[in-house]
Amino acid sequence: MIIAEASASGKIILFGEHAVVYGVPAIAVPVTTLRTTVTVETAPQGRGLTIHIPDTHTSLAVSLSDTPDHKNSLFYTLHLTLQTLNITTPPDLTFTIESTIPVGAGLGSGAAVSAALARALSQALGTPLNNDDLNPIVYEVEKIHHGTPSGIDNTVIVYEQPIIYTKGQPIETFIPTVSFQLLVVDVGHRTPTHITVGEVRQLYEADPLRYTAIFEAIRHIVQDARYAINDADWPQLGSLMNENHRMLQQLTVSDEKTDHLCEVARQAGAYGAKLSGGGRGGNLIVLVSPDHQASVQQQLIKAGADRVFLTQVGN
Ligand code: PMV
Image 1 (spheres, rainbow, N blue to C red):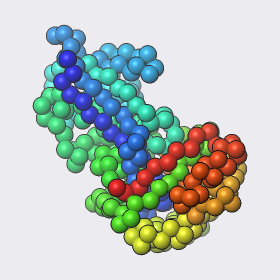
Image 2 (cartoon, protein in one colour; image 1 turned 135 degrees about the vertical axis):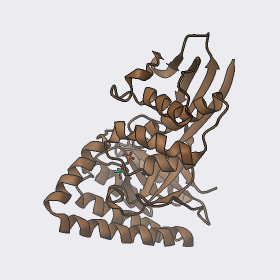
Image 3 (cartoon, rainbow, N blue to C red; image 1 turned 90 degrees about the vertical axis):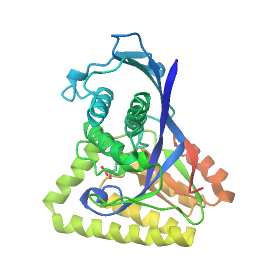
Image 4 (cartoon, rainbow, N blue to C red; image 1 turned 120 degrees about the vertical axis):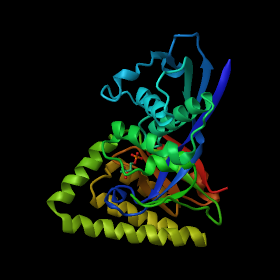
């Protein structure tokens, strides 16, 4: 019998990735149409915790003593949740995890699984975690995937609202006065985020002045983007996306195919395009008016994009 069900959304970063690691604000939004859902059933007494992942035909008997050394993010999530709830004896529960968020694509699949799993466990135990208590758990688990994450992914996913995120600062959420749509484009290959983040770190350490200047330029772009979103000024927002992309090129986190697809989108009539997230593949985002959507999408697929979907920012 299902006793609890919880879910969490995917996410995209609109502005400020990488610079956010160095204290610059960044803007991120949830992608509510992509979700991870976790259902919980009671298990026979003494069975402990079990996780089923039907998509990968996986069934795992959860070993809590293995955490966190074994770096199993699912076990670690359950461990931290029980710890937060002050529960020392693991209950007998079976979890089923289902997700429509592509894995490893910079869409927040890892953080969404952690958030949904922790929510589901706490609900099943009758003590649902609030978002303020859930966020640090998901952040801790994110460290397994990303090494030294800024905290933006877990925050936007846990609160499931558009956010302006500054490391170490209180969370600022916003609702666009006018909603808008973005195309999210899968470039077709991926680079783990910790690799590009590590390379930017090396560049920064070798020449702090040069890279601080780039981060500061991104800070201004993020600031202007907030005004453009507020004013519903789409041509301006698009041109800020292009500018942010140029800064990401200077941080060396773009690549030929990502640049090419951004250019194809612009040529096909988009207001602007930029990579989103860790870079060197993964996803790019494109701001386009409704009358250009279909043709931009078509051109992107023709130019080699793996998948293009539409997401809405705001209600
Ligand atoms: O690759 P993603 O979408 O998880 O984005 C990571 C964002 C970075 O700014 C590159 C790293 C971070 O921890 O903020």
